[in-house]
Image 1 (cartoon, one colour):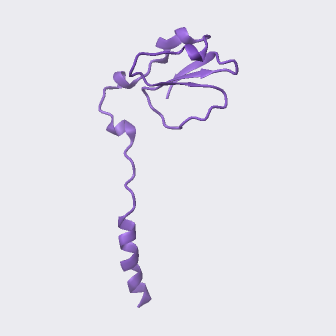
Image 2: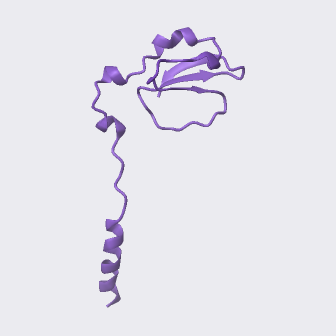
Image 3: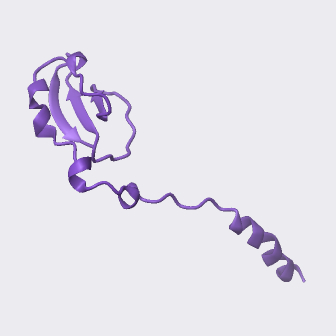
Amino acid sequence: MRLTVLPVILFPLLACQPEAPADAAETDTRPPEATACKPDSYAAFLGRPGSEVSLPEGTLYRVIGPGDMITMDQRAERVNFETDAEGIVRRIRCG
């Protein structure tokens, strides 16, 4: 008798599980060239203070210092400016 009640209790709980999020790459309908950040085009910022990084409005970017906490989400259109301990941009990458 107990075994027949268990599925009746568990089934509604399983139905309430959150749906897995869709992969961002699958839902982005923009062409690849519109989402690529093209880090080489920002090479002028290499060797300059991270505080001088300024990109056109709508450009997704972040300046990351040593030990800074950052999100681990990967966004192909985001430009990451990585600085050293003195705040100088040493690396530019997408992500």
